[in-house]
Length: 332
Image (cartoon, rainbow, N blue to C red; front, side, top):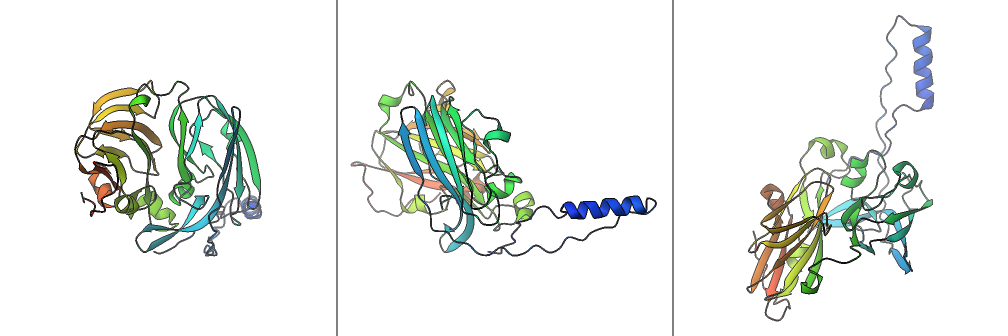
């Protein structure tokens, strides 16, 4: 894939602004001189080995330590993308906390070329104070309450946010409701799905104007077909789903069933019944639950079928014993 790295967004530094201002005042009747942008430098290829997140609980305080890093990941068979990531994967680690927890979050930035940050959709915090940039080779620690239950996106919030999200800096955080979901006792299997898009590598023009080359579940277009989710006949399955975009909506659908219960954004107060498809905006999520009544493969996809064709599909395999029978996955 072609790589057009866009690492420096300030084409005019402070000295450049001063020079232009001085020229304008010296020659007020003339047009200010136009400074041509120098061609951007190619960023050195960096492939940090994934760093494991550190998560531990002390009472109602959850300590989370994550790492911003650049790492090669496989987004399709034989196709590698030098992604900007949290902890070396895209999506980043799935975080799971409880409503009412206090998060003490530390971000380490291994990227030598640019700042990164963390924007948790799940928390109440002043972004200018709690979602601030962590500079290269530094770390920052921030605290926030997780008071709203649900399933949420997190992502890097450094401007331009599109650049950081499209390059892979996103993930899912689940805030379990204090009193649980009314259907908890009925759930037999649960899984997580993050939908996202991959464009031409590190190409801001493509991120803004182009079409994605891949639209995927959990980072690539093949793993959830080669290694399906599993369930037994009669199981009630719960999926935690977020669509991180950055640009497309998701029309989330499971072929061969309807959703018994849907909790929009994962909040137990936002309950819907008997849904066929759930619309997820970029940056939105849902908890969906359904029952599988017969043995076989159930495709999971976005019903934006052009995006499903680009890879946003998975398989739920239902067998009598809940084990993978090794059969080729159904295509859709």
